[in-house]
Length: 466
Image (cartoon, rainbow, N blue to C red; front, top):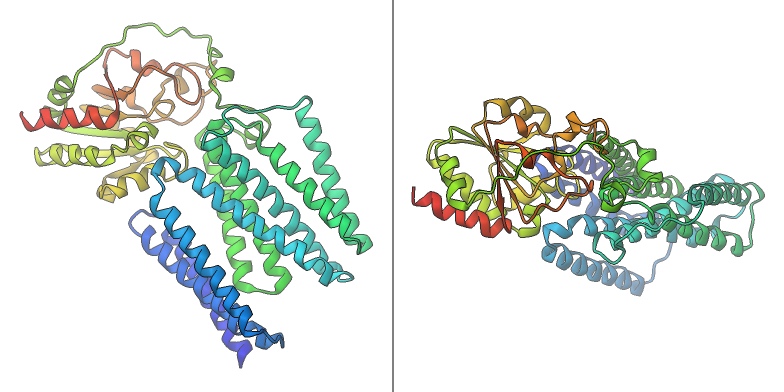
């Protein structure tokens, strides 16, 4: 009876994970998707705590249940408080940190289960695989977290870095195979494997530049899912297996989509150092010609007021300034004047996929106004004004025009095709690619300098007076 109940709970949990992941694909349903996934996880946890011990004939003392639920309560409070307080600009590093905790969990499972499964080659292989992958994910995620929050500002490349990493990876594989094949009982071997995997995780991420961090986080997320799936195989836990496979496959698909959106191969991300201004700047052989045309809030307001169609392109600068609410106010003001307003969303705008979607959702922007790059690029030619807020590389025409540019071939928003362009930036400082943006020198472009929140507030005030 208990087995049937546990199977049903795990089945419901798996359905919750699958439905939840599907619903996360749209901003309209993402909130409910999170809810269904959380319900599935709750069912899996309760089934494992209360029913699994009876099936496995384990006698669990009452105080152990107290410890378990105390740990769950403390972890829930910490996670809830962190998630509630985190700023949108800090969301990528929070994702990296939480992902690292998942990898650490998988690694600890391997360390704890090693002594109990000596002689069981099939289980030992799951333990070793989960330990290695989880350790790499944990260590790599912590380095990514440190890079994103500014503790590690520059990539560090050791001499013969690629050779060193390749040799270390080979040692990890050989040692792991030896532990499984020889059924090693000495814990020194498993702790050595653990330490080497941590070192590899650090070396794996340490030299990678800041612009590539979202890709690395996504890749490490898939690693954590894979490690969790090995844990599911080890325990015969279908919910854990399903969740791990979903996270692993979704992370892999997202990694591929992001590298495609950046016109980068995964090998270039892992073995290169793209994303640091010093390394990328000056690589383009084309000297940008033209003058910068500056506009004030009143100029921008007048241009927007007499437009029939406006497309807003949000970027990381919008998140930094926390200007999403005033931007929504601007959009509503234009809509009341009968102007058609849409938002153009680039896949890698911000610091992670969906960054702009979540930021605008926070300001209650209508989901129907958010349009993906593939669907909106054809509309720029018929647009009176494009307002670029804090975006840079994702609107740089060099991706089309300059074969020597490091972003050449990268899919970008075709903003230059619009009739008029307003670009809001703090300064002329290059974006993550470290190159100048020829869009800023376009005769149709007016530069609205200043913090996005302050500048847009002034534009809104001017619009209200027209």
